[in-house]
Image (cartoon, rainbow, N blue to C red; front, side):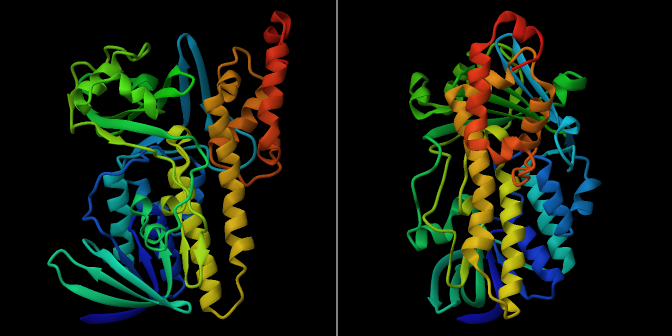
Length: 418
């Protein structure tokens, strides 16, 4: 069996893995990426948020993406019946990027991987991890390629960025109960033959059918759009078992978008993902760290997946470099506690979305401008900025605002005083 040795083995060539690899490569560290799939490959997580732009830029990947022509995303729109709540990232609290992209992930991930390869990073596709053994902090990983041949890879450290493949979470029995209640999702792509111009054909929109049931519309620059529903598991029992028939039934439940997609070409049978939220018992161990969705995935409602994937991938790479240089790393404090701060903020917002509290704030007819700016910064992904009270006091501030809304008189509603 062939064997090679690297400083760092990265499992997964999605955004988290490529950000890690690109950063480490620029620091002169020998990296190898193994990826089970062959790119391009489909993935969910097609709407980015501005904070991930910081991570892509620091990893040296942003310029390669800018000229591709992805649909720019300047904000988000929420619709519930006749109520509309809109957020413009340029009108948020604090500094940071005020736009990002909506991307077909097959194209986006392939572009990142090709840029990494152009830099000289070794990526082996169609390489499945079949075994990993640790001796102290060092590891031997056995991979199998598409020809059925096996190879050993020795590494001083492993970054598991395998996403929903969750390689180490499964092999080391690290799976844990998710922070967010069980929801499932069903989605597909369509080719729009008569897409509206302006906002209607460019802006990501979430239509709320019920407090816990919502639909996404994500238009891409290539004329394709992503459509999907997220709901508690039991909601899907109302529809036929066949995914295509079920999806048509769900589209008929829409109000704002009802009938708009009836004649559009569906590009692949709708895909259902059950129990989309994920969690683990620990994020690191002797010789390894988990990043991105291989560690935790909350819920797609605020598009936080790629932001957390790139944030955790970048931070993990920096700490791995520090450790390989012989410096002590407190992985709990420097990695887990930091990442969990951001995760916990977003987790609060996701939970309060599904209680209906955040929806009350978003759909308020006359929102307080400062409160809206501060919430907008959270939705843009700046969840580590504790100068923002909606970050620092996230565990109670949303409930306090809703209490004020519930106490409002018609006069208060008119004067933006909630």
